[in-house]
Image 1 (cartoon, each protein chain N blue to C red):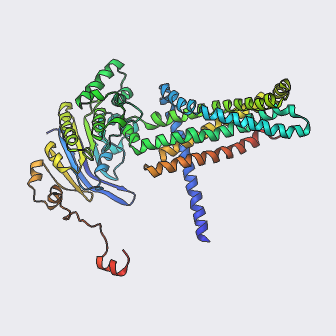
Image 2 (cartoon, chains in turn cyan, purple; image 1 turned 90 degrees about the horizontal axis):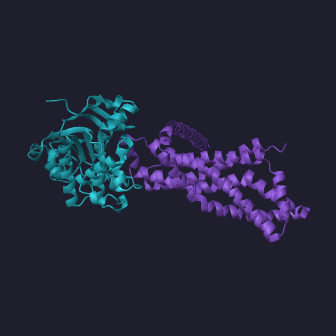
Image 3 (tube, rainbow over the protein chains, first blue to last red; image 1 turned 60 degrees about the vertical axis):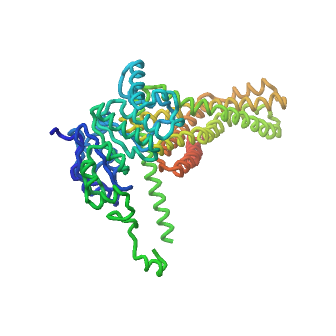
Length: 267
Length: 260
């Protein structure tokens, strides 16, 4: 088996005093779609930022295509980022440009292609996400699901080797959600890329991904293929898959004794 | 008592840090300006937004300041029987002080606040981050063009402000009050020195342009990415720009015009 495209080795990360990632090791094999799951605020998005080089790990290594992201200078990092695509939670489209110009943006910035060719490429990317007809609209005129599809077209404009998705399913209606899910899978296969999805939408993810990691309190607590995950007896995964309010992930934020707090009048 | 000193101390320290951040940011802008000049249309677009769209408020305010200067000037000068010196008074006060300072204050509240709001909102909606992830430097692509747009348009706007002001003074003095037209212009031309008065004024407005543009882009780029954060950043832009303009004006005036 060839070397995985992305490998995290014993990665640790903290914002100031607050430890976010304690000891994470995982890998994304080439050509696969991998999901990272966990509750809100468990450090999933931080992982994407580490892989994209927007943050640097405190300990351990983040390897992308054999390069240690934490050690790259700005130029090499930008060279690497040209081969990565990241879809932000709410699309992050440039609001002062049309849909067409948004998708053309990376092409115009990084290539010297003639306008006719850029025009064709943009229309192809937009066609792939089903929004060729929306090329002249402004981001403000799009629904949430459409905006995310446009952002997806922009993300794949330069045919990246790695696609990263930050909560791609959040706030979408069931139809848009299914569309985005299918697009993630289809584009990954069509581009021969590898994809990393950070999400907490377990049902959608089980249908489209090859492998899932569960993160809790800065560690990988469970992993497996969708079939393994469905049939696991792991209490954390069980709680997550069945959306139970209480379990290994407690319902209550850590607090002192309840009775004492009520009688004593202080939290 | 100790608490007061501690607070004062921490205020001073954070102020110095802030100055350091701004200075570093300024160096970054200069460093990446070359990249943004390669695509001049970006800067020209910002020139339009900061400069052309500020024209109305600048021209109208200039006219009114000139009208008021004319009225007040005439009223004072005629006591000494020298109402023909009105042209000189209007021109000198506008070229040396009011043109650069008032245009700068207006520019900060019209264009500076808009730039801060735009960059701040781009930060809130993760557009800057997205750009950075696409390997496009937001300082070169977003910040530098807006900075230079402000720097270039500010002296031009101040010049137009002064021109309108002089026109307003002429309107009041010559057209309405009846001061002699020839005396108005010839006294002005005799008294106004190109280097000493005009160029010093232009220099002042250029310095204000750099200050306001830098504060505006910095506050936008540095804001806390929330609705409240953006609103505070806009307020800070207007307040700090105003203070910076007045302080810089005092310093420059004390060097330029020593009443030799």
